[in-house]
Image (cartoon, rainbow, N blue to C red):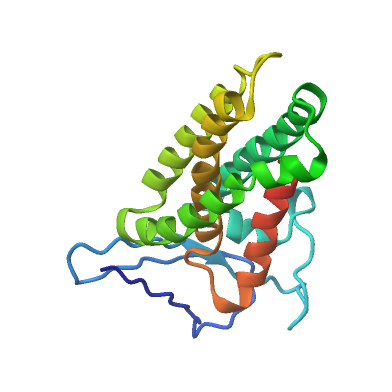
Length: 212
């Protein structure tokens, strides 16, 4: 059995000097994995109260910089981009192969490749528990390995192939990898984020997936 807690931090010091303040999170309970950012940037005197922070280096707001500086932010975004490349890329190529080479109709192709979303959903449910129990890194590595193997199998498609012999093995491996990678990237995007910043963190994660 596993469980996790989300905690927020509201500083008592309300000075607006734009300085970076360090945060250290410690727990007394043994066997607990802590995923937290190492600090935050206080608003500057030019930032409006209750409004968006002014633009900073390279046009990035302090709020976005804080989110990207968290321990798992950049690995999570990288995982999201990589997963999207595999998902969208294989979808286009397998669709062309099934319809142009095997002669399937779009409806037939959609039904036969339903194995991908079905296995992805099952893997996403399981990966939520695995991430909280074993951490982001292990799930990310396993999911990326599964996606790489699945894409590798799909590179062996032949002009005289069939769905069962050529497409199905790769899709059965790719689907679970995609589901686990998506969940791991989403959890990494919001880990250690305050409630008021969770929407921004989720938006950045979704943007990375769309870029891929």
